[in-house]
Image 1: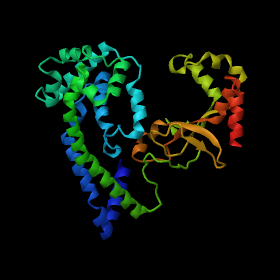
Image 2: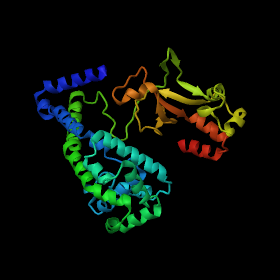
Image 3: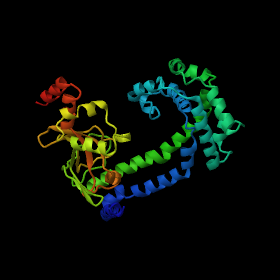
Image 4: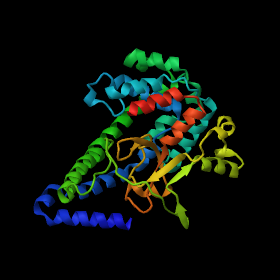
Length: 361
């Protein structure tokens, strides 16, 4: 954190020292502070105005969905834009089971927590409880709903605003009552928090580019980017972590823990051990700067050959959200050698391996 503070102080000093930059970007920091203070003033509402319930979430989605899809795409609430609708409809039609007893327990707990933090006079709780105890309200809501049935949800979705408005389902009725409050809160957050932070973020991004140019890369923004790194080990727990593991290590680790729990190996791997070249690299680490969301990203060598797939970072890289430490931060990838070795000798997928390798050529 001291390094992050030092970097921030240096950045702010650069902006303040240039009259043009100061006029254009200097107010961004104060805007962020003001927005955060406003956000904190209603943080409990954001956190506790919920029921921790699958059924309640489905009801809210349906009530919002039938209204939002009628609007132009640019005016819809987040989550209901045209590009998101296929995924949303898939979720609404999911046949995954919902357990009534668990729902009652979760809703009861959420209401009791809401009461402890916000008090029973909170407008949200007044609507949810309607004069009942937490458990009574939870049981009535769950037992009076048929939203656990995907066919019921599908009919409501297809029936549109008229079907949802006419529904007597307990969860839908509650979601309709809560909808104005939720929309008002969403509008308040958009006007006072999100729009301010977005504009301030754009100003700070421009200021950083003005101050540092191309000498440093920007924060990740869900856009494609390249990270350059080197395959190398690092100091760990008083020793040295190697840059790679092998299939030897896979079996040694499993045997050391009696093949139990997370160290269990499928029979295919136990019975096929003699077929494998155990010196084949399994995983490797590199100094690439990654963050959550990079899983599945290809690791490419200097010859543009795919040599691995990122799937994690080491524990020391958790601070990478804020600052990158080249001495300890490591990206962890599975080696393509292990993939092809297993596909050939354990899964009988030689044709797939040939296709992958020939495609590289």
